[in-house]
Length: 406
Image 1 (cartoon, rainbow, N blue to C red):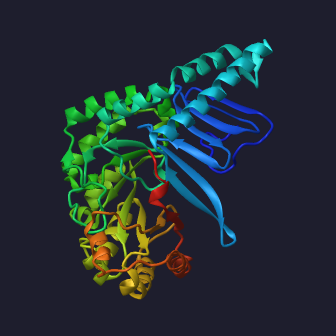
Image 2: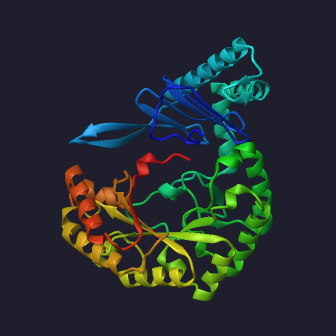
Image 3: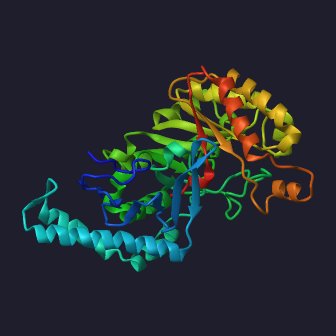
């Protein structure tokens, strides 16, 4: 079966076609085209670029380029004119395939019933570039911006139980500065989920797992969270999207404000893994970043999650703190990770830091009170931290925010 979401293989011959209720894809010597079950473009791999269309019709181009003897992924968000050109090329490929199927004059094409294939191609062609851009408004009526997800959750269904971040004071982050922290009521969630299912339609089958947004839904009391999880389970009962479980971001304060019994109840309600942005093991750097909690709090929060039967994903940054904190950051981050009770099913993400214009951290750089590490120095930090934690049993992976589109 052809890959449902091609990311690395690229175009090749011979022709392969994949037609499922939630997906249509085909690949040949020119390109790889993927459309969701409603007919909307999902991705186009053409030339040296993988174009991924977000649900808001933003388009991200990902390339693999040689650098110092290795291949490096680079990402660039397209402007609307460039995105339109991608949409037009994808539509042209669909028109060409439709013509080829009709010209063949046979009941079966590439192993698929022609009538069903032509019907799906008709849905694809109904999504002109203008129709795809109109999805942006539909998306914005349903969702607040989906600012970030862990890399293993890019294909999850995001269910925004909350909006924003209850803390929102870290000096390096602007992901949720555009919204207040809000929690949906039971009735609001039911109504929102009905709209969500209508928006996705058959494309819901492409989604793997449910990610509970936004930045920290575990900050709400357990007594308020559990009824919301019950609704999610009820609304998607029997659907494949729940087969992988539910996932969420949290911070140490949210975890430490809950007992192990409460966290166990949340796990029993379907939550599988919690992602913690720990950033560093250096207390001094945590303070500089205005990040709440201490390394001891970080260790205790991970222990409590593990005792409750939950998997964890811990996220640390490379390059943050400049030369001022570089040595301390690497040493103490390795020490911290070594002290965490991690094992199979857990993840350690090393995320490259990019200073975001307008944040207090970026202002420190502008004023000359903080410097930036070079690309080589950041790569060296990644390698040193990774080599220092090999053998923990958890999977270690890079986390590049620039590669995210929902």
